[in-house]
Length: 89
Image 1: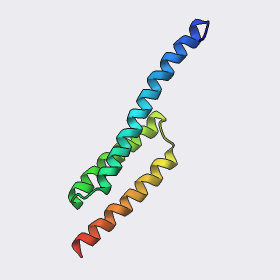
Image 2: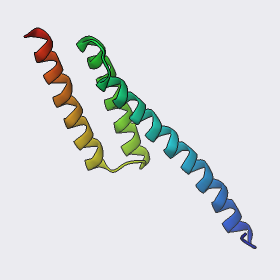
Image 3: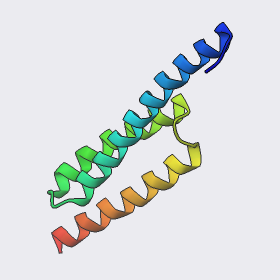
Image 4: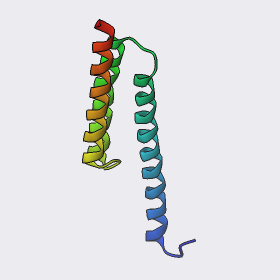
């Protein structure tokens, strides 16, 4: 346990940030799972736009790296587009 005031304050902020980061990561993970579940292509499009927003905000807050978000968005877009094509065929 720290003896000085500054490290105690730092521990408090670290705890808050960790909680926020975990919440954001869990939200992103949950939305990704919903997209991969059995939903209609229209619902997948809606979830995809919501997930894009969450990923961009996570990057802005520093929760995940910019390239990680870009990679996930790309892969999810490919998945949704393939699902859309399969549905129409």
